[in-house]
Image (tube, rainbow, N blue to C red; front, top):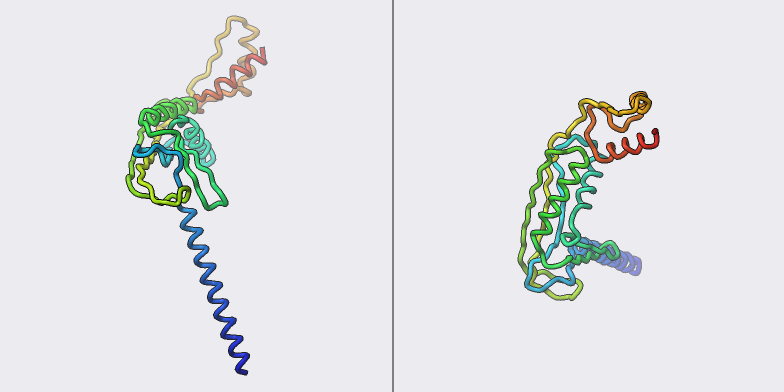
Length: 212
């Protein structure tokens, strides 16, 4: 009975240590996964650390809004991007394009307004929120603490209301072409009460070229 008690006690201790070890590993993995290491940045100069896009307003479905946000993010200038690589789903390494320059961010915002124009939002407005955090951060890349000036940029796009098509009129000099255009209206990419988008206009031009 004594040996049985010792075995049970030893088993409980081993299991407890194992559980504590797993908890520590999980906690460490959680801490590391929430940290991003920066490499190849210019010392003593602010650098871009994070970029985000917020799209407000507009008439979008959930999928359309997600697609529009991705479209806006694609308008960010290469010099205003942060390139992040993940290793083992835990280590995140950010490589800034260069020392931060506000000109690239405002250029990116203008690009976003142009992109909204193509989606039929002619009154969209932009704003850029820039925050800088200066401090000492531990680098898992160099394994030491480093003084850094991290810049976070948030692009806020107010979509407003889309510009909608009210009336569609075809005016062609040749009667036969005019009739073709009018008779094929049900297949048109441009429809009443829908946004004036670049894609639909180009689609309609292509449709008419093939029709004629």
